[in-house]
Image 1: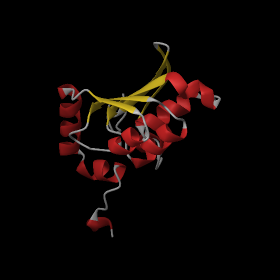
Image 2: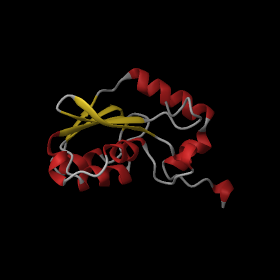
Image 3: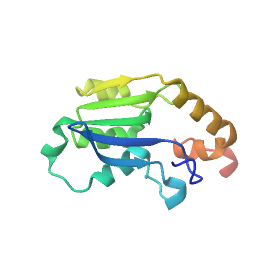
Image 4: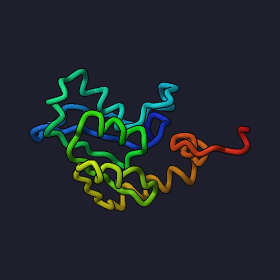
Length: 138
């Protein structure tokens, strides 16, 4: 959905008891936001919940979570993360594992190809999303 809106094609859902309780996608471009990654948007969609709510949820995401999204996963003690692919971007999976989070990487080729196609045509936007400094902007 993010790509169809002119943004970055990374989505995420939060699942509890087999039901989607929160869904989101990267809306940094659409909202002019510095922090609205797919995982953050999905957590925002869940809404305000007690800490116990997250004890048995699974967070699904297109791409390996960055440092910011990993921080949110750890803050809410989300126990299980399923990642579509991590070849395009290897986030903080080891940090998640070191804190006891179950991390599954599906290595889904369609996720990988989607990201490769996007980056090929939108490298500046992609670098901005992952915090890579573009020397042309200095």
